[in-house]
Picture 1 (tube, helix red, strand yellow):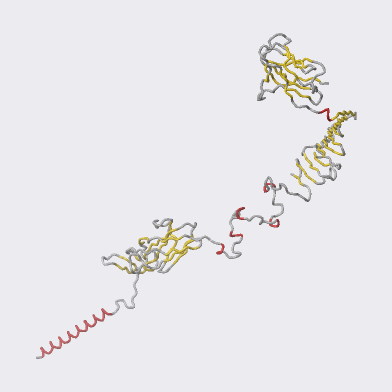
Picture 2 (cartoon, helix red, strand yellow):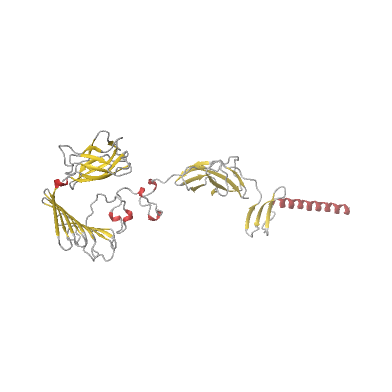
Length: 466
């Protein structure tokens, strides 16, 4: 009896122990497995195949954090919103995806790439900036104002890049005058040589804006002062040496205007000059070199009188003057000896060239004077007459009259007595020309050799008419 009671007690005790184990096991499953525990080193997260996809804790470089080593590429973002901005573009992502509904929890950021074509391939050289979450925007500066295209690339925490989005298009805005406030642009904002002549309005630079002494000859065009009046004093091409000085009152030559010309050569003591005299004449004189007085040429005029006077360095003076209808030539040598010649103006008259009145068969060698002169004559200022030109000698000519100069009404070119002259031809010898008091011109071959040839040239046959 006792034995059966002991076994029943033992069975109840075993059942109680098993129930306690069951209760403790249930409690253990519901409670945290590592309450108030610490882990040293790293915790690895693995996939179903046991491959590590994330590491929590101490990293390989000694830092502490969370890294993701394996991940699927993120989805493709929709095309960005691209808005024009001054000298750039404004890019915004609305947070939507072209091939997914939800944003991956491991999304890190979006790369912003800019290119010159819609289908450009994003790469390290095209990336301009990054965006974070939906609604983020960024400003992109451009180097030109040409149209640009922008694409987005999503990157997750494992640095895995997804496909590029479709391209958004935008054109930068140029800066307009309304974008700048008054006084905004200062000297430091302008590049060197930025302001050129095309940017400066005509007549906008006043005299007070030009520093004294800054304008020199290289800044003036050839006709810059054409027709302008220069007042105030002396105008000169240099301060020393060879130079020209224009002055309304020369000082050296009195108080009249003068143009002084310095040669710069030693031993010049006075410059050459062109000056106005007190009587209204003009004097041109050479520089004074010291050894001899300067030579000069003067032009003067007065009541019924005009004269030209030349003074040489050795004191010789030659004056040509006109008084009423007379012309006087006055010469004074260096010893003071004076000679004067006077003659009437009418005695200087010169006649026009007149053609010779040919005898039958005679003609000009070159009627159009393309190569040779026609045969003609005229009276000269010194009272002589001149015959020139080339004539054709007719066939069978054996000497005699070839033509006549002057007329019975005008004998001013005829000589008082006949004189022989020499003429050339192509007959092999010189011919003799006679101009007779009655105006007849004769040609003879007095040597008797060579014949007459086919032409005769009178050269400049000249005779006295008095």
